[in-house]
Length: 82
Image 1 (cartoon, one colour):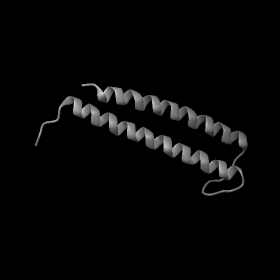
Image 2 (tube, rainbow, N blue to C red):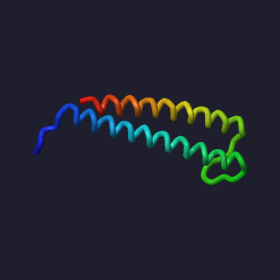
Image 3 (cartoon, rainbow, N blue to C red):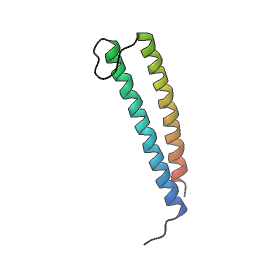
Image 4 (spheres, rainbow, N blue to C red):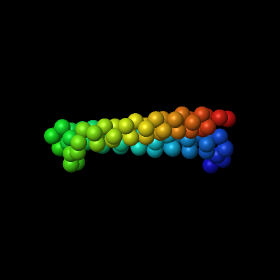
């Protein structure tokens, strides 16, 4: 069995954490879309709200997306260092 180097461990950790943040982004945007349908009178899985509540939800999703993308980029740079 080959020994793992520190750079291999960092690369694997960065890739795993980047994937986790990508999943978070996907999950929050799924909820945004489902709530838009519910708010528009087409409930698929969630109860509806108001358009202003949905707007706040979209804003929150954008903020979470930006934070996660920045984290993914930073993790990619950190994991890519030799």
